[in-house]
Length: 239
Image (tube, rainbow, N blue to C red; front, side, top):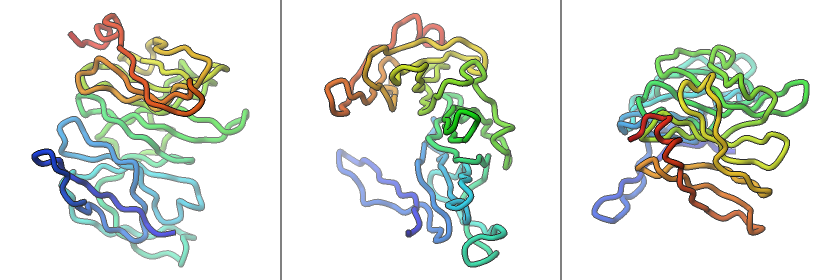
């Protein structure tokens, strides 16, 4: 399988520009990019050499305009033996099972991500938080949402206008959209949707007042939009 690289396109006067390649790292896979609120940085999931076998995916942050690739020593047992490979940006954290779906808090100081892992009940997914100033942490050093331990939750999405974190969680029923105000590690989540079907993949509107999500309420997955109650916005500090 070939490597994945990051590309960007610009919308100029209503027209999309040709794709611009941001990374060119044959031994490394970069995907699931997320822009910082100021548009100056990109967080992305990074598959380092050997990660396709070990199941470890790292979280990197790079300059949005692209930056010089640096060399890193190869991992023991990586395909083809130890060596060197190019990476772009700075590594924040590595997690067994993967760092997926990174999303930035509105102040740009925190990134939430989904993590896959195996525990006594089998395969599990959860949401964790890491500071953007972190340096090669292990997932165990990231902040977890302990109040939801035992309930699978994933697909975090920070509001661009308030201190609110939307995510998907199941408490033994279908998947629903929940919203968590700051402090995320200890506050009580507010259930936004409650439906026998699955509501997944939340995405905030630019004004932070609505959430679009995918749902199979009509049999197939379609896009729906829901208004976020004013009291929830106020809880997140939005006027």
